[in-house]
Amino acid sequence: MKEYDFYIVPTPIGNLGDITHRAIEILKTADVIACEDMRVTQKLLNHFDIKTKCISYHKFNEKERINCFLEILNEGKKIALVSDAGTPLFCDPGAVIVEELRKHNYTVTALAGANAVATFLSQVPREAEDFFFAGFLPKTKTQIENLIKKYRKTDIVFYDSPNRILNTLEIIKEKRPDASCAVGRELTKIFEEIVIDRTENIIEHFKTNILKGEIVGLVFREKNNSSDTDINEKIEILKAKGFKAKEISIILSELYNINKNDVYKRCLD
Image 1 (cartoon, rainbow, N blue to C red):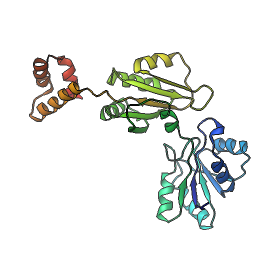
Image 2: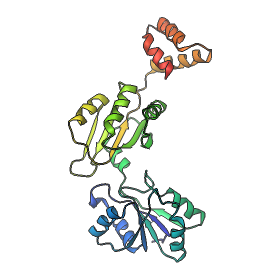
Image 3: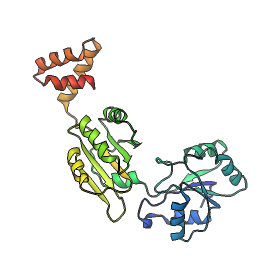
Image 4: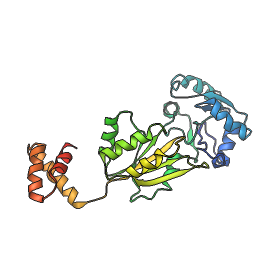
């Protein structure tokens, strides 16, 4: 098997049985393991009787660790990078050091393994394969609304925390009242649950269920509707001609017998 200088090693997102034989081998034979939280990683290493030395590597010391890692590699040693759970560089540290190592012509490879997005999506039926991965959603309501608006024709996949998800779903319901969502929690664990329903129903469901651990969510794309598309196109044409939202709503509601307020809201969107 080909040897590399730097290994990106996925770790289980919950069920320890999901670690691969190759991941265990690399973690045992590496000279150093770079990890987010040494306490979390040490539990995993103890479980598999891995004695390799650990060095902390997280978003607050990424740049500081570059010279340290380069010195280790200059000595001909191997480094394995892990995150607390899942695949590094998916909303986890790693991009800074990988970029730097490639600049210095060190060999980098990634192992296949656990990933929350793939685990979640493989259980959620979708109309198409494409999706937009937003990572952790932005903090403000306006930023979330803008993202939902921008990708309304694509499935949006995102990470969220238990203390934020209900607020996030409320924003989605407000921006897209007819939207359906999927929410997954405790993936690969005993209390794993994936709920697929209209957003308002998911909100009610989780109001009475304790939420723990990382959340993976999906906002389903808007259904293709030719009449809606036609109206949106006409709105854009009238906007380009200099008509105001109020004028456009009056014109199109009269011509096509549709709700004036609905047209006005679309103009503002």
